[in-house]
Image (cartoon, rainbow, N blue to C red; front, side):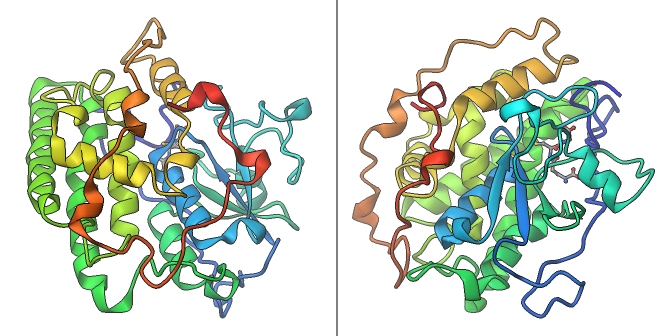
Length: 338
Ligand SMILES: N[C@@H](CCC(=O)N[C@@H](CS)C(=O)NCC(=O)O)C(=O)O
């Protein structure tokens, strides 16, 4: 397996994302054997990964940082995949392991699939609980409610779920996963179809967001988190490395302002590490970028410029409040920030 292929079927003619293999859920009633419990689980992420970043943002917005600890893997995998080489002695200080694969192996011997983030690991047994990135954040929002902070927003409001699910399905198909389909395509038609779909969908989203601050309702929901994690990577990696280059995010006034608005909202931009993002994509996908050279651009300073979206109204946290400051140990280092 080429480093970075993972279970993403990289190298096939058409990129197909494999299904998450471990789909147990951590729930309030513990029906899969994994009850919500403070301190019991560790969320393993890469700051480079858009699917993992969803969970990092949700955890911050919901104030789950005191209940669910965070392990950040090195953005550069080796042939055994995600590793804890940023930690002292190259071991995760809580799980005591060097590779995330060890938690996968503890769960299932001989598991043939890739090792992916985000992953929830049971601290006591060291076993992987789930790598189901589509489910993890929905469960943080709806099953972990007893452990939410005071003033936590409702990221998946029951009355709006149908609309949120519909928006997220389109965003997943054409945007979140669409950029990967374009980037990993190995023949022209597959690339052109994916790239066209990316920009067709972005244009529709731009229209939708021209007159409203957030994608669904008037508050931040899971749908915004999922669109944000792709938009924030767009100019840094998807535009160049994945060849989604009909236009840059900064060239669409609506989407650029929408993305900046979220970036500047506590819980979003303060989780983003552009250094991890750029180094991961450009160094790991050697099939696309054989030299491993990481470009110097783009200029990130614009992320902090005024966005003017308050004029559209909206209540970012609904009846709730923004999260407090980032924990000291989780502050993104200067080289990762605009
Ligand atoms: N768990 C999902 C999606 C999550 C995912 O693709 N994560 C990437 C990082 S962005 C990953 O860990 N890939 C495995 C690898 O690169 O080794 C899957 O099964 O495809």
